[in-house]
Image 1 (cartoon, one colour):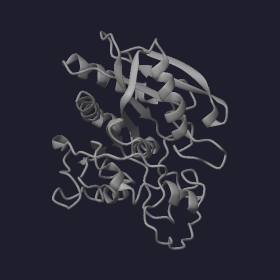
Image 2: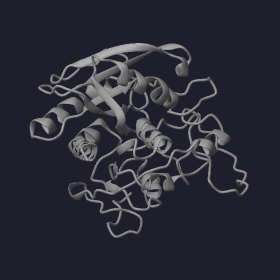
Image 3: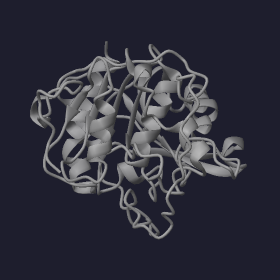
Image 4: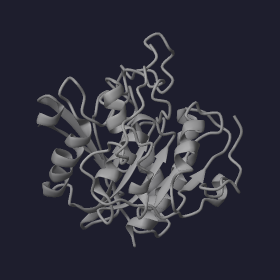
Length: 310
């Protein structure tokens, strides 16, 4: 794969060091089914159960080492949207800051959890602290454990997107210890969570969503090529795929970062080409790895903070 041509129609300039601030947004949509009234072409999905897990990180089975920096506030709630299970959450506020803060909701990747973004592998809270210490407007980070749900309704009755919207956000707003405002939020996600952040942005729309920043979003353009872990059936894919939904992002600022050797690069570039106006699209050498995601976090935090402060 090769980095996208900066002059290609539908994409912003593609150097990570000169990211454009594209404006994107959405009116509230009741679902993500295709807007066309035409009958969909019958497609038989391929059998992919034996295919390598191309969007997965190794399962995190041991306690994570949380990097030093702003302390985490953690807790849990019983989530009806997640089948009645205890759902853990974590919040980081920058140190040295008081008062009510806006929040960026973090949606995690497959086989990770609510603490992964704060672990020594990524340290998003330390990137945020440096951003605030440089004199920029502060905000908080908040994540909830979505398990392997993929942020849409599944046949097992769980729906992590509904958990975020109907349970987690109200909890954040009503918890006096956290002192957070959710009237206007940012969204951040990587891999599975990148897809999830885009889907939630489309559901909420502007002005509720101030900005979205995603890394390596798990997107499949080919309806024969999605894995069962992401969608339960062809009908599920057709109802929840983001392809064909780019018009929902016309007024929400959006930054997409993806390594040029990432397995989702082609699909992500194809999806971004349908955005009008174009998103900020940043790429450089790198793959579907923590190393790449950590390298772009400063730009992601700056993009989210700048748009939240408007």
